Length: 167
Image (cartoon, rainbow, N blue to C red; front, side):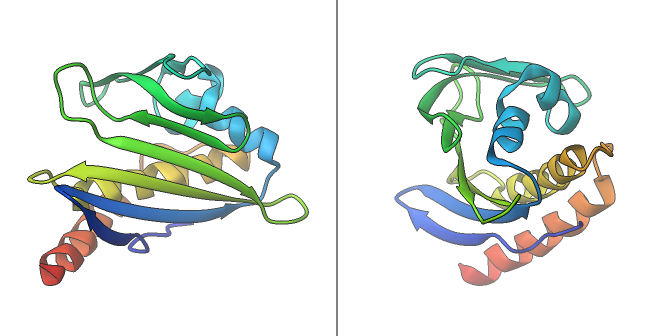
């Protein structure tokens, strides 16, 4: 696994937009379940629950870091698209969008798009997602892993350097 540093960046107004892709060796149904079912979310992201409807609650609790996501689903198309904000009430919106595309056989391309407000550390956000996407791949393979902190640190520095050289 250990795939990092591959996000593509652009700007949209005051937001940094990061796009990441992974090809996962599993079915669309299994990847969708990992993105949406509480018993699966805890294996790669955090304990939580996502109501699978437009306007439904998206709640995740990262107990180790104290981060709590308390948001709403802003876009959904079952087994194809899910979007909610990576924030809580009173915080700036930080949309995260997952898009699933079958790749033939038992493979799925997962595209993740992050929108990070100006002034926030987009490198840190991307590094966190790199780590969690590796955790997702491991979970789908049946060998869940803990948060890969060393990968996170290396990815954070790589992204910060790329972002600083782009400005």
